[in-house]
Image 1 (cartoon, one colour):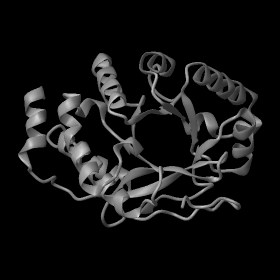
Image 2 (image 1 turned 90 degrees about the vertical axis):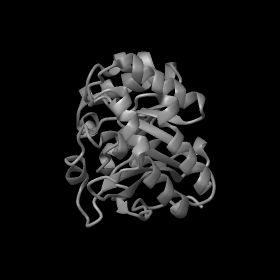
Image 3 (image 1 turned 120 degrees about the vertical axis):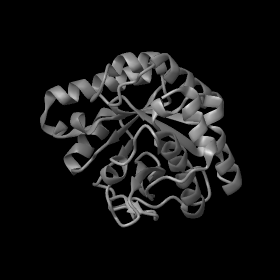
Length: 255
């Protein structure tokens, strides 16, 4: 699809052929004992999982869907999030952004209309999606960071050329893939790999989030490694159009 046709989708105002909403999943900061942010996750309006919705995304609606996800997440966050600096993390499709300055307009307008500071927004992109034009993705990330958005490389360690992308993009954060996390307490190899990634990240000024935490043993091993930001079912399950209560004793909702 050409650049013009993609941009035309955003301007057309044509509705998507399906409906969706968002669930929110907390990212906790065990150093402060509060919620660092919430990731917005696509869900169906009748409780369907993300796969049901993403399976309906194609080349004809990909660009409208990406824009609609951003707007929906910001609108819901504006009514749900507590005052302060709790962040909103939004997944975006790098191959769905043609011109960074043009494609970010709807996001900025939604944040302005809702009164949600755009500096509280983080954009996650995944290395699992093979990038058609890596240089173009780098331009997107550079543009977003210059505008004050945070950027994060999701699923780090699971997809394509993770270290190469980290060296090239240098996002604000990386999110360790759960494949590296699962069973880490009993795996010297996983502990060594994670320790190496943490060391690299610190050396270049990139923060680390461990996602997919399900057990207390995983949490203990990762805390021992020096990680303070976590996400996973151990703390809470994603909740549709609401902020879930945290399950970890001693934690508090950000106030």
